[in-house]
View 1 (cartoon, helix red, strand yellow):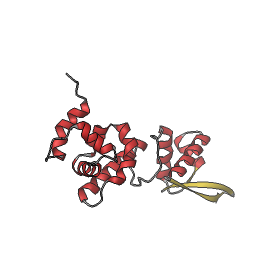
View 2 (cartoon, rainbow, N blue to C red):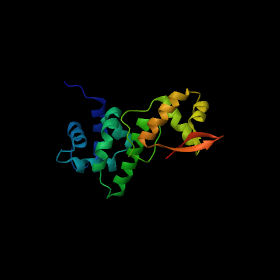
View 3 (cartoon, rainbow, N blue to C red):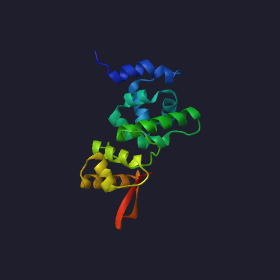
View 4 (cartoon, rainbow, N blue to C red):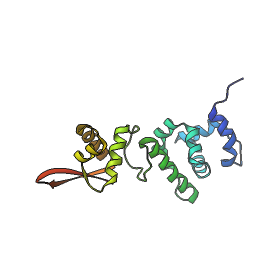
Length: 179
C-alpha cells in the first residue's frame, strides 16, 4: 500500500471546499497550478486562489516551491472576481513574508532568495525614519559599516530603498529611505 503524504491528506480534507463539482486528485491539482501549459491552469488557479486560504495554498505547494513559483504564476490569476483579487493580495503578502520576513504590497521587487537576518535588520531600521545615512543605520543596529553599506546596495537594487545625496555637517552623505 502506498503512503499518502501530509499534503495529500490536507488536499483530501479541503479540496471539496474549492472544487464541489468534481473530485480532483492532488497530483492533478498540483500539475494544473504549477504548469502554465496545463489545459486547466487558469481555471484551477483562479478557483483555488478564490476559495482556499492562503496558508493552506502554501502548505499544499510547499513553502520553498511557493516562494519560487508564485511570482511566475501570479500574473495568470484573474483580476475580474473580487474573491480572486483578495486571494491574490493575501498570497502576495505571504510570498513577501516568506522571502523577507515581513509583508509589503509591491510584489514587483526582484528577490530571488530569502533575506538574511542582517538584511532584514537593515531594512527595518531604514523604515523607522524618513531619511537616514548608512553610518547611523550601522550604529543603530550595531553592525559593521561595510556590511550595512552592502545591504543598502542590495536593497536599492531590489527597489525597496532609495538613496539621495545630501550634505551633513559639510560632508557629502547618502541618505536612505524606504519606498
